[in-house]
Picture 1: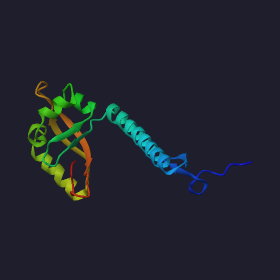
Picture 2: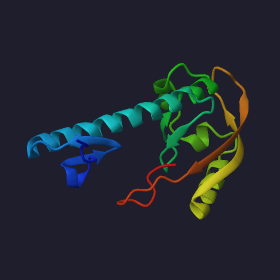
Picture 3: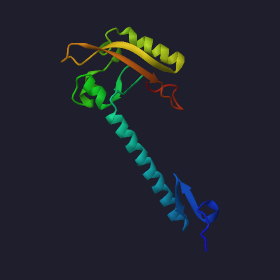
Picture 4: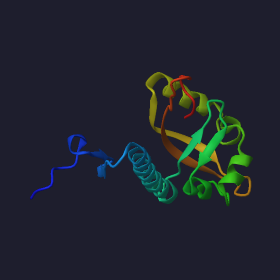
Length: 153
């Protein structure tokens, strides 16, 4: 005898591509929440692995020019040992990172007008220990929220 396919009409529910049998209401909600939590943790783990191992530098900054986060590649590129060290050292990207502080304003203006920036080239300073600069080609997009138009770059 064939078993019916799992789905809402068969007493099962499909969440994140997995079928959960329905036994009772408390079990269903706990199990569904567990499947969702597992799928979210798996997705976060895969994203974190890419973020930490990609060869390009990735960072987030606030609108006022404070760095919020940086991946290991950007930390190394700028001559720091840790992300915390880099974030503590740079409080104003325009003044402390760009060789020409006006480039940050140009970057923000393009981002504001277009919603994204592609292939923007600037000269940036590395940590004070290196005493030299690098040419940086970057791209960005605005990160928006429902309660604030733009929360970070």
